[in-house]
Length: 141
Image (cartoon, rainbow, N blue to C red):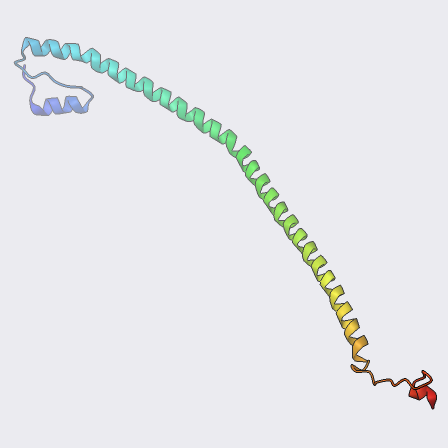
């Protein structure tokens, strides 16, 4: 009984792996029969590998899901530490600049005080003449 192309197509669509076409050589039939267990074993191995892969993916996904909150906490801690460091650094810079400004203000006050003290005096004092008695002319009069 011969199968036409439509019958073989329906069979392949229905799940058949292959068809032997008549007339078949005995060596070809033996080779096909020996190949079927190899194909079956290869298919089973592929399914086993696929299951292992799915298990590995599920395990790794679970590990990552467990690690994610821990890493998020560490990131938040590091960000808080960085913000604290920036705040402390700005505070120290403020203290330093405040101290420098205070010292500079003290120097300006000294300079300003001396300027006003010396500006109220004449720059050149009038000459004093000492008379024969050793008194100044203003005292002699």
